[in-house]
Length: 434
Image 1 (tube, helix red, strand yellow):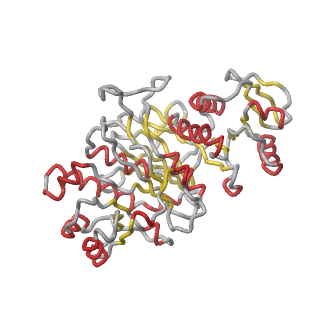
Image 2: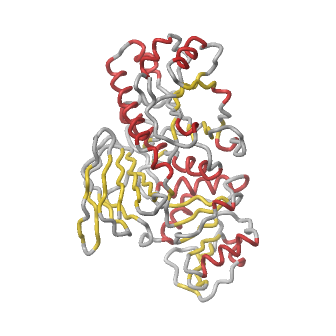
């Protein structure tokens, strides 16, 4: 077995984890991993699965016991842990949420599909423990529908698009069907391996820097945990590209390149952070603060505000938007931020992409960018187009299982350059080059 992983400096970053079912006691099942990207087995108990563990190590696989991982729900993760990876559990299976009857799609107040995703968790974890790979844990609930190939592909893509890895966990049908040689189970298994192999082949993308027009600043903990974390979650649902700025980690508070900063917490910033935010606004940025902090910054002349519930004033070359009511609903706060920031400063503008999750990042040298789109429906994504703010020369389109990328040329539409995507399912990545 030869794991197919890119050359990375951290050995833990090369691990592609799989949760070995406790009912699998036959080491012969390791044949499923031959020439597979999976190179790390997570066993509930090494003592109980000694024959499997010994055979796996002999085959060149890494074997870890579950209790050794420090796995915990997000609120209980020890961010200063010396362990080589951050393992977050208790998460949602990425999908469009269905109603109780499983026949219709739930929607938010705007009518848009209500999508469950772990994007925000992976982004926050990467900021809090920046030198460790992020592993995400989620499984199906007892009332969830049986997943198919598409569901597994989406689950893998939702994690991988943010540079994290899902600890692959099989449903009951695959746990029973794969040892029995069931044809449908084997087909689904091959699709899982194909999706994993795709993202391992492009693992270098995980080192690219997330780029957005707004920085969401919070402690994301204590009394600010719910509002701060839900704003991250709901901003992603609105395709508001953001960077996570953690109040407890000054190294994360990079404001360069942002159009706006949303200061979520009601506690005042430290003098150093206040000076930094003030300078950001005076240099041309938009600073959005809660009602309790409106008096902390010396706003100037009133400006007509496009969003009700805010006092918008000039601040140097930029502006200050202070809420005139308390923030108690993260859904509406995310909507307010989307409207206050606007779309003109977005690095990319998507069209016909209501059910697509959007991730935008730039290469370390700044000469390339990546737009990843994760779809959550079983229907092909058709007539999707996008207009980048920067005039890229061309874009290479990657899809899972397609082999060589397709080269897209920009098309002029109403004076702007657009890239028109061919129909794709579940996932597409556009790599732009200058």
